[in-house]
Image (spheres, each protein chain N blue to C red):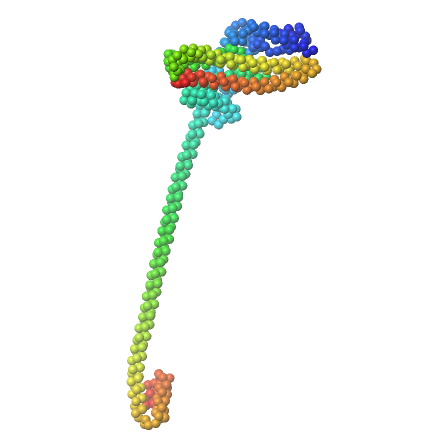
Length: 201
Length: 265
């Protein structure tokens, strides 16, 4: 059962081998060479003249596009960086300007305050001076009038003292008391002092 | 052949053989333009390759779609991983189209070996590997001669500098053999043998699976599962080999070009 196919196989292999001895696979037939040549020439022409250059063109174009894109991006980036630098510069300038203005305002404010202070001090000094002058004037006036009054009073008092007998102290003190009372009365009615004084005398 | 097997017993087992690579003619029998199954497979591969790349190139846009991205990945691989890697960017640029063409063409002819209904690699018959190898051969010779002149190129490639002269007695014939015979021959045979072996392996696994499932009796059927799994594994291997051989072929193209046009070894 097993031998039959094996024998058959062996036999046909032998037959094949016998047959093959006529055809050496290393010796080409003319038609084989002819067709192979035709085929290879067709392939070579189509590939080298048409297909590959076309692909190459597309690849080159793509490379160019990518390169262009990269360059474009680079330029854009450079531009953006430039703009940014410019903007930052402007910002910095603005900050400096603001700081300068603030400083100036502060200085000006200070100056104003100092000026106002000086003015106020001057005003105060002036007021004080005026007051003092007025006081001085009044004092002098008072002193003058006092001197007049004191002179008059002293004279009056002296005349009174001299007029009365100065023998006993009781009388003396009574005189003084009376004088003082008169004085007081005089003071209470300053408006009519001149008339009352005249009446008393 | 099937007849022979049938004579022996009812069971038919079709082992793959070298005859697979020389199927009967379909058209133009006996002329230089004879077309058999394998030529047809190659033509189909060419049409597919052309369609993909012509449509791809025509629709190539600045912003690639999915289809274009895949194509560009392949082109990028040829340019960077093969041409620039070996030749450097300056020299490599000039040869990128040729290397790319060779890579994709060889790959497409290899991959037909695993495509259902095609099932044979276009490069598994010697004609195509020969043409590719001759292309590479004349190209590197021509580039070398163009750069150094005939004498200069011969001196450059047969008498590598920095070797004491008696060594040349030994070295020069070896180098000559290398440059003029071994490089193209190995290009042809490596590709051919890989693709033939791949086809034979795959066909053997699938023929055995088919035979064991449908013709063998009893426990022997179970072995069909084993051969099926093996066939599956070899299928994946062949996809890998198809790409690998295309890569090897084009990278050797770059290496041979580099050896021809670079000043020092």
